[in-house]
Length: 482
Ligand code: UDX
Image (tube, rainbow, N blue to C red; front, side, top):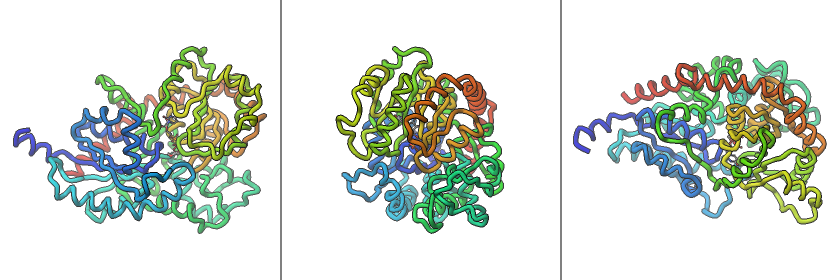
């Protein structure tokens, strides 16, 4: 590069994106990173060393980002020994400890970027995962503008912002034996929320509960950022976005991000690619090719959910007894104890062989877009919910933790995109819901999901709100670097 080229590169804005170390965070944050790269802005993507290694081992993300010379990964230590499993139920312990380890390292990283003139402008904007609010403090300390990125739904975020109201109304803590009691003190959700639909961390005996306090603190603290990015679109969460704007006036809704990226890449030869932390078993695509149109129900509980052996077997019975074909992802680390031979009856094993296919990890976006898929049994993670909407696949929700409880209430009660099975692991209910989703109430759900998918497409297409908001975000990032 000649001297002028070097000087020009030093003028390019530089964003540091800091992602929490979990699949449901890394996926949308890498999509955002790519969208920012497409606008010609330099990006440093920070995630824990361990996660980065898994990502580079199991996906083709490195070769994909090689196309963007201004992009690079920068690992950060999580302070744990290499052989620590860091998965499943350990995620909360990890979360509690991570800030103390990572905060000084991030500060050092940002300072060293200032010293080390590696052909790039020092970081001009930090985009921090909404779970990592300490990154906002570090940025503030160093005079760098910071934006918070929420990977979960706005309705979940809003519930946390209303904790004071819940406590004042005597609705938190609530009686765990009366989970159907109504919740009336969250503006915009007065008429349909029950205790069981609140984010799972609200199921506490005391508001001093350690995990509840941590997530509450993270959520409230992240509102100190200059702006919030949400992976959502206005037609989906409009009323709650209006409520949220009363406390966070600057919000960029730019989702559904996975589809937004596809649209922005249209016209280039670049295809979207996997960002999986597990090796994808693509053999299921061949199996799907051989199945009739919309005949298969896809089952996946995301990247963190753990299921006990007993629940798994109950679920198995319900699914097989429904008589439907299914593709089921069972992550190797997702069952809390071994399922022993003899616990599953021979008819069940036959049913699985005849009509089912199982993998440890699937290329989910591709699976949902396949013509053979007619329904999705999901844990209601926010990415899975958005991916299902875009692919027009109605859902049965079996939420496990976090935002999933409130997402699933919206899926059934507000958007009419499927059925909410929360807190139920009963084979008869599972069987009935699968039949309802795939046959009895199919038309009704297809009508709503087709409509919502159209809104999603419009939002990320040229002139749509998510599209315009991303342009606005890019412009604002450029202004921050002047
Ligand atoms: C969790 C929360 O539940 C979620 O709401 C929050 O926003 C992020 O953390 P996770 O449990 O992993 O995330 O669920 P989800 O948000 O649905 O993300 C899972 C991602 O993994 C999706 O993008 C999905 O496409 C992908 N996936 C899942 C695969 O690629 N293959 C699989 O087999 C399963």
